[in-house]
Length: 316
Image (cartoon, rainbow, N blue to C red):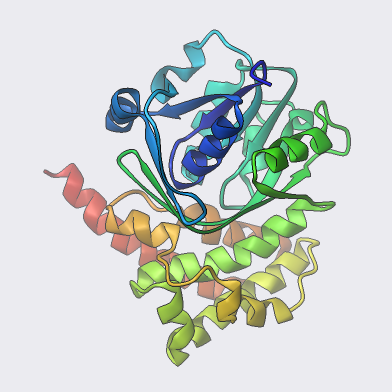
């Protein structure tokens, strides 16, 4: 078991949670981080505060500096790419020499373009996509897990150099709810319907998921974004029923009162992922001749809001 080497490319709310679950099972897990976060993990390890198990301390963990990752003299059997989507290109460059012929690289990210970006540097037969369903937060060296924790994985190439059933069993043995998708791109499009609406709008109006669902005005906005995205998805070849809109607005299908990942990033004055969520939808619309006025409007508002604090930080 310990012979299997696993790399978590990006330790945060997603990478921290799944990496620690795999570590608890006994796998040889390496976490990556940069700058102050790297120092925190190196000196203090990780803490998992989970709704499932309570607080657990992992004081001694393997930590690699993300900034010098390309110089690591190791080969990993499984790499979970958990960086924000704007970091996918950089990550692909850094991990391309860290895999062997049978390695599996799984994008655990938001968006519909990450797998294509990774395939510029890594053989597509070594890449898998994943839909991650979790409510979690990350601060300093603490992973706060408040709900869900399911993943759906799938091949992006008909022929693969890895055994997807083996990967699924690896997750299941680590007490991670994992399913295999027969069409992971369709599932990623289904997920982006939620992200393009809830993630983006949560920053525009600075509201939690529950607040947006309970308010008639924000519900109408959410519906409009989702409907536009479904139309573009169909033009791209992915048939998603409009009933998905009501499913997404059903409180029981959302993990309780929580802030979206984009709202968390906004409150921390970090770069936001809207160009890789709403922007990806706009690009797909342009490719297939379908207008995306609502996603464009939301994107322009988010650009304005982000520029205000990023420019302020640059001028300090």
